[in-house]
Length: 461
Image 1 (spheres, one colour):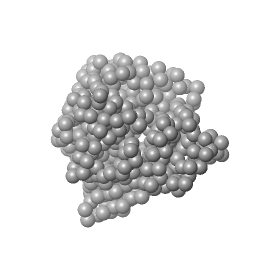
Image 2 (spheres, rainbow, N blue to C red):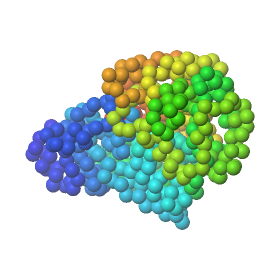
Image 3 (cartoon, one colour):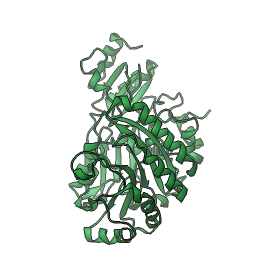
Image 4 (cartoon, rainbow, N blue to C red):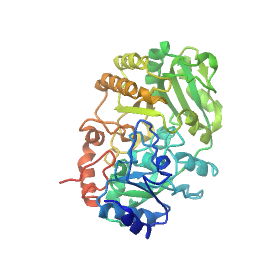
């Protein structure tokens, strides 16, 4: 139980901020990225260093509290918070150090993807990550991390060299190939199940300017585009990463007003190199497709591409996610996609297919927790709108779409794209043959399942 005296006791060993429901900062502090989710924790512990994290973990464990770990606060399922429990908020842990000689980046767990992009870009480097700069780097990494550089350099976890972790018993350890290797194996894709990661050390790659942007076609051309894209991707150079979307042109700048509200099939591409090379790489696909509605491809800094969608996706929108790994995109699946995407309930709602081939496939499925090394895409269906009254409509559209398309896909999905209402077995299916080993590692490092506000892996019996 939390009361003023227990909080006062915690404050003796805590330098950050302790926020309860009576604090005027409480309602702002508890807000989540997904406005569809409204949780009221008993205590929010805003940590300012690792010592605070240790104190908060010990406090939560000793008082038998439900504990949620919040990094950048971007989790779609709202798993960075909980009702009536303790939120360990890492948002103030923002340190970043780039070593240009070793091509490494160390980032604290409160950093966003944009923070890491900004720091690395000054040295002509980048860490493979996602596609929205406001995403928290901690949650992104622990779930896997795929984006524009995945085909060439692999997932975020494929570039993770070590992590510092506060365990359920309050110990602080480093996990790497040399130290606590079993924990390091599990952290790479196993989510927040094994402890509170306070910092990450990444391998970085030389990336500076890229040839990138969106190309839109009216949705009446979607079948042709999806078939051409399906055939093109295996032949595309790994420097080129095009993801496909079925969506609607938002009624806002910078999109031309004459296409606002038009349903489209989109390719959003990144070529890691000069524009002339990128254009040559895209040319075989362009030649197979009709004239686009809009072509936004241009040369830009990688950091610009990473923040391209930020303005469309502010904190507080209503979100409902459904996802799958996808191995093949059959003609029947294409027809099903188009049928349901055409019924999109809002301008921001979408379906994306992110390529996870190339370098991702060169790592064995048993080498780390993230096991789906034979899929071609990671699919996400998102019902999105600012209007809270549309929540039920967004959920229904997302579920109906997923129910129709799931039969074409293998079991399991990217855990960062999963809600907390997934059917039993979805987490196990996502890890497949790696799940028993994950359960054993969980039993070793968190036998009481203290860290269970996540896509949970139960400790092995």
